[in-house]
Image: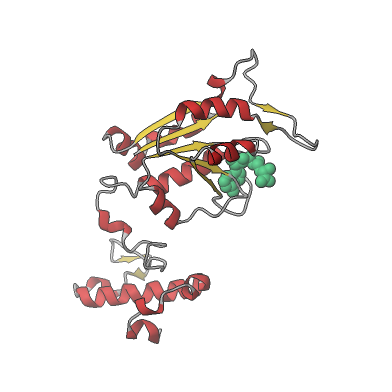
Length: 241
Ligand code: SAM
């Protein structure tokens, strides 16, 4: 998969060289390219913004600079991702869907955001344009939002996680439950013990305990997720909880 990020602060994206995403790049599983939007400016001051049409506070990013940049970066079949607090929520389902796309291009806004004609133009030109919010709060720019979305997508690409099974039971996986609590060694730490069933070596009991814990935890913390569960996916013991 190819991912491009266009930003006026390319240094923000340096974290993509680290950890699993960095390894995926080195291994050739992910072709990740970071671009400086100002490389597409034509004036001496490398201007990317201007005053808002209609007046008001702040500055807005100019469509002409974004247009020349995106014309160069978008390839056939690309998805243009525009992070914005006014977009639909980015979720694990979104990450799963985007992980199947050939190219994602992240347009990182700053100031009051990007002139709305940019999304409109590419949409009407037949490009898949996805506006997406990572939560109900406002950041200073799209870079951190892009980092969040790229990490969530990249870990789903084939070969990126050492053990692909790790994503199956995770919180927000297709099972629709939060993950059960996890433990490791030592068996006792500050008078707190690993639940004995996890030390029993009995795979069936461990699986049942984990499932019960996942359901209890989801019910306590995210009743909205329980309400959205597919009842047919629950067994008799699940329903008793
Ligand atoms: N004036 C905009 C509004 O009220 O919707 C907020 C602009 S914000 C200060 C600047 C940029 O940060 C946005 O263009 C977007 O790229 C990014 N951003 C801020 N919050 C975000 C969020 N929750 N999700 C995704 N991107 C966000």
